[in-house]
Length: 146
Image (cartoon, rainbow, N blue to C red; front, side, top):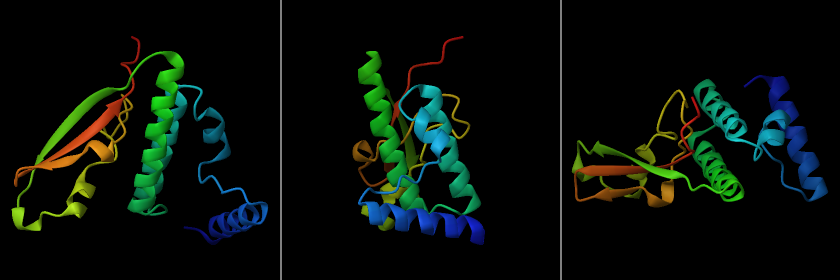
């Protein structure tokens, strides 16, 4: 992370703390499109992935942002009259002796890396089946129109 970016985030955090309003880590353009459309949510998801890939966003923070994105997706669905569709990804656990609550963190943040269809991870529904399968659950926006 560049020092200029760090100082901007630090000053933004200080201003948010002084005002009593929590700082929103999403860029302003993304925030404005946050709940307006699936496209706006997809751009927010791409921003999360880019920050993770650049090393600017630790994975635990990214998972929290994906949870917020999932809530916004559900809210958008309620507003527009649709329910997110569930998708499942089953991963084989190579070493069952490593089972533990942290293993659920092995699920990817999104069902598709390219985000053609917006499917954020639903951590609350992801679980371990038996001793050999990790089931990652995702909530998906409706299929894009052709």
